[in-house]
Length: 88
Image (cartoon, rainbow, N blue to C red; front, side, top):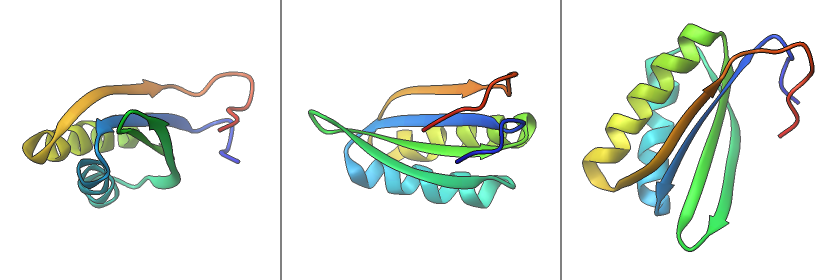
């Protein structure tokens, strides 16, 4: 489980290849940890990363750019830390 003081970042793509590219770029771009991937259905998959807000924002932006070069990015989101823990 993520530390409640960490931000959560998500990148959703259409297709696994684009998500693998996004995950690789996110981990290389900033000091974040990959929580995992979730298959949504209809070809949609989402990667989850955690870290401090600035690192997660940089990672999500890098991941979306990388995935967009080879596939379709459906959405991105950065959720800053709150007072209650995030359960993924």
